[in-house]
Length: 305
Image (cartoon, rainbow, N blue to C red; front, side):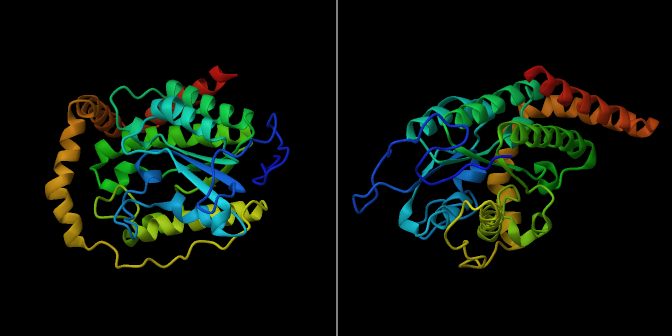
């Protein structure tokens, strides 16, 4: 795989170098433009910055891309609840106008939580996003994501269907990353993803520690390919992680609303999936469900060819 470069100049896979999209505070154009596309993970939920607004892994990573923190300009297009349709639509358009040297694409978990989930549609959208960014000369950064059902602690009849969907999305991201020459981080099975301290009170988004660990993993990956010239983000959080009491309070207040907001869409279909899960487990034929999802995923990727 030919790795993208992040400094101005001709780039593999790109038509030409991008002119500066903006100016830094000192009036000089940034050496590196970094666009972050995705959902609440990339928006930074779970990591309140010093100004009280969400910060997140992308903002923690950005200063370490250049020789100095002032050499990098970050455009964070991500927003909470974003689906692959949002990333393939407005976020991609905004990112292309920004003309980034590097763009991260982390999305898909919210798609698995929708009754309309279709891995063929998800694969097509992600193919469009990665293809458009690479065709415009941007390096692309991707990652496999942890299973949200496991993080929430759902009962197995509900968790396993969601886990299959997340594995399907991760498989698509992995294959498309290879096809488009993206740098891919296998974040779904990292040891820190099982550490309770790495997750915020809602159990769905990383805590400050989790965001710092994810940013550090990305920095290490980029450094190996000679694409990060600065220091990695500091791994230690500024404050203590969320307590169990905070997690219980979130579930009793905002968590119940979060679940209720998705019940009208996700729950009816998920209950049907759970019923099928129970039937197949009782019959010892769970492998049929695994094979079915695998075949749908490989078919979705084959359709792109």
